Length: 391
Ligand SMILES: Cc1ncc(COP(=O)(O)O)c(C=O)c1O
Image (cartoon, rainbow, N blue to C red; front, top):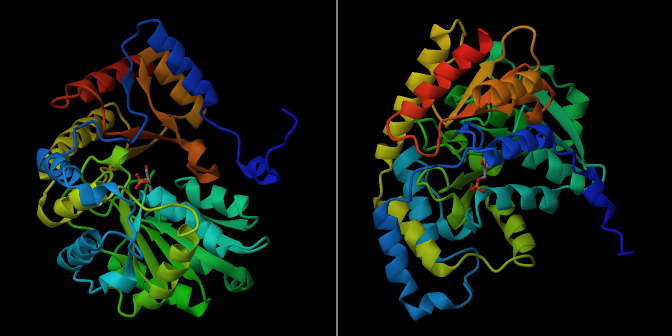
């Protein structure tokens, strides 16, 4: 076809996992038993009460039509505001300070499109979920990377950002609990981030997709900082929290001007979510506790971290999210080590370099292992890794 796609598509960086994906596909086609620690997609089913709530809502014909509300099905937004209050003590006006998203990825992407003009700058963490950077670039903006280093607890060092860069920027992207490092931000850190955003006239976009996926201490929300609503929009997701990745539902909360701006954009892009999904999601937020899944992840996490450490690694045990971020042994790059594990151990992991330059030297291992009932697949993975590196 002679019609060329828009040049913005050329801004999408090349797919870094192409080689590893090809090796994985070939191994599976050969019938090898691959233990996949790659994708971060809950392997457990959505809790039954949520499926029940969906079935009931789907039988109600009023859910079969467009959601013609302003910012999302009212019961869902009210449940989101109630959950934010119960979980973080954050008081929100559901009508003006929350909005429905078709998953948090959708909201993150469209926030970049709603705010970034050609030449505008956004501050993005490195390593990071790629959506912040790619959408800034596609909108014609520039990305200034904030390295997340182990010695700083994988938090950005705002004092290292030159004053004129900070002043020139428009958006500050953060993500805690963090993918891929598993790091958690404290309320003190959020206070610093809010101050930095205020001083530099930035909109702080906090991606909190893993806020409720934690093991012991509940991670805070950036909106707990007094006055944060003036500069913070925070995105939450039901995907990982309730094993609902396929359902596509989340919400944004906080700064009413940012909510209204994103809503203006989205009103011209989509027609919200199937109302029955919104009602089932409201039921989840109000009534469902997903502790059984988290306890299974905890078991897998401990087997993986203790197992790798017994092989001589020094792996940090994450307090939240579903990822173990491990430094590769000396002599390997992220990609060469991932290749070794796939070829010699039939274990799939993600090279850290895929999340940015500062991810080089690490691999990400996800705790969402298909077919693992009680940690036995993870245990098998550790044994295979041990054999492969000691060959
Ligand atoms: C950091 C982070 N943010 C957002 C998302 C998107 O989640 P969803 O669009 O399913 O809400 C993911 C998915 O893996 C993620 O890792």
